[in-house]
Image (cartoon, rainbow, N blue to C red; front, side, top):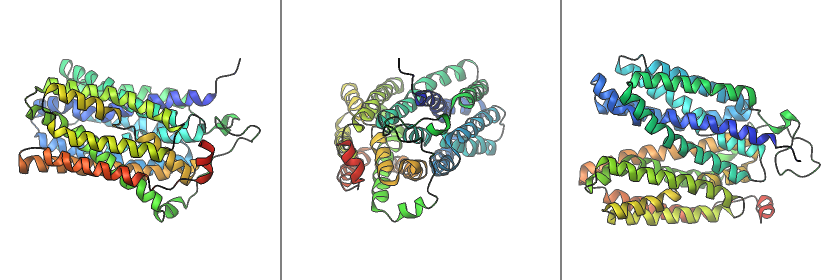
Length: 409
């Protein structure tokens, strides 16, 4: 009987860390109303702290990627989880708005960015050659599952016990996640005398060493900029526009907030399915073609959204859009690894992911500005649909390593 490859243990532990990071990232959205009701702080002020956290979540990814490439994911993940526990514990004690900016903004943003953005891509590319796309899809699904799991739990804890008690619970959960990472995570297959899964038979275990000059070369590469631009569009059209503004749009169509949030949950469930399927397909097909299909499908669904004004049509949109909400992640990570090397995924993908979050932040603001100026979201959705179609065309121009492309067929 074949012994289970140890990389699957590392995946399981990293999935736990990803779930916890997604839970911590969900705290502001779940607890903004209880915090406002308890403290009297303006919603705008609370939202500002949340925005700080989102920006630092994105900017924390390149730093995390660089550190993981240099020092390994184990120590950086332990640091991120510890910082999550500290930020949640301090948030339970805050009494001033500047403290909110510190803990929900600075500390939580950095902590979740250190773990949530890069860990899955780093583990997948260090431990797997075969099934790499599937493993990346598992981590994308874990991020979606973390939100689906923790948002209702946080709402339940905050409404039943209070937001301070909910913060203490999240601090404890984050601290407990340190244990499996400390005992079971390894930085690379060579650390346990193994090769990456799918490596050539007879090859020696390879110690993974990052190239310190990789970003200088990446910044001169058109491939890097195409990946960054398309992922910027991904963030703008998903987390930024739909993630922030779908519920207000649905409410403007006459739905109740409860019904709108239920439709958003359908989108999250479809996102879970779509990301896993995307990982499977990435192992078998050209990632550039997959990205073209995903972005094209997304663009068309966004062009349809202004005409979706009933519960039935909004559910249809949620199903269609949810299937490729973050399905772009596995092929994007695969293209980064193919072109820049598996050992440099953390560093390079960290900056590509930062572009994603900057796109999300920009679209979140622009969608609100369009709504305030025009009284509706239609123009924002139509523009998002057009740039989604543009991303589909740009994806076909991404260069891929001929050797790795031939190996995949």
